[in-house]
Image 1: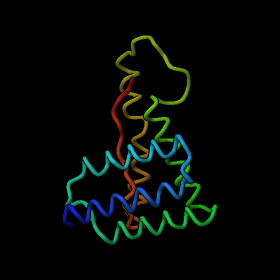
Image 2: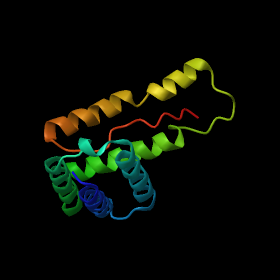
Image 3: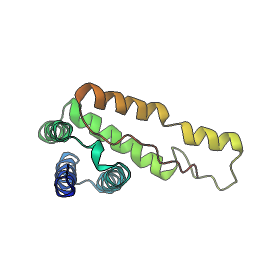
Image 4: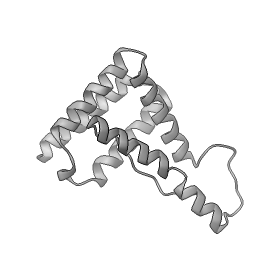
Length: 135
């Protein structure tokens, strides 16, 4: 895909996903940062027009009806938001031990693997990456 097509795909995905979450405040910021991160980290050869079209169709279903697609998008954004904040629970101001750092950096690996399998089975391109900031 050319850089112009990737830019159009980014804008279409952002627009569709913002409509799917109905412009809710924490979700739209989390969504924009995660989508931006996915498009800056992945090379242009990683994008496929068919995968982007399938993702847009999935987001369209999430936008139109409050079904399974909407619940998947809602839960993805909730977990991404909690991951950016450093996990569930109260903030901890003491220094982390080596074991705690290892647990916090690998806690979302199974979740990301499930997103990758969903992408593979439905031929989509939802961002599945871990932000490795344990603090």
